[in-house]
Image (cartoon, rainbow, N blue to C red; front, top):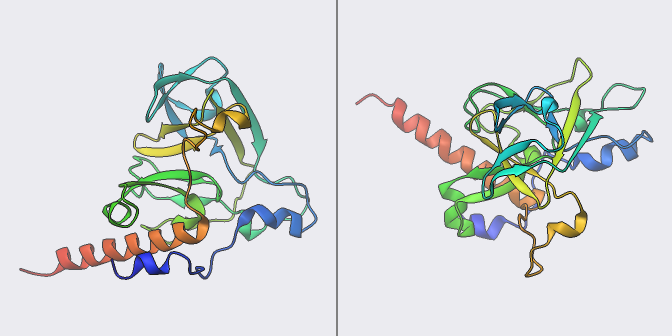
Length: 220
């Protein structure tokens, strides 16, 4: 498809890995993955803000149904004394961009599960797990400067899971212990695409969406 398979090893332009930004500035490590407070997850008590979830609460997962949370980590987006560097800015996701029914924010290194015909044709699977950073510029998703302290919540399960958030979006949540990330067969349960490949995939998805919008806008 449009030579995408041949381009998967080509580095994208205009995006950089946020995980090294804090170290480059000599500041404390920043939290670049996790769910921003206000994000709602599906639980046995309905849709609840992620900051209200505690150990023992059950959350709806993509493959495992309701699963109990075994650990909750709470951090802030940026701990440095200087202004939050642009590489760490969260991404604002407009309503509907990822199936979400309300606007929401994503941290750049938070892995997101997307469904796409392009992914199925290129990767053999309609679902692809990609860093949120790769979605910058897709369907109106863009970075914004944080104007307040953002609490970041990371939910941990016995094994890594994909959870439902803001009605339709799907986010990866890690296992409680690093060793639990492997299945009995020794393979990762959920393997995200490298940033380079994820950016190329999202660029082609956006191109297809734009072609579709232009086609439907033509007068009959």
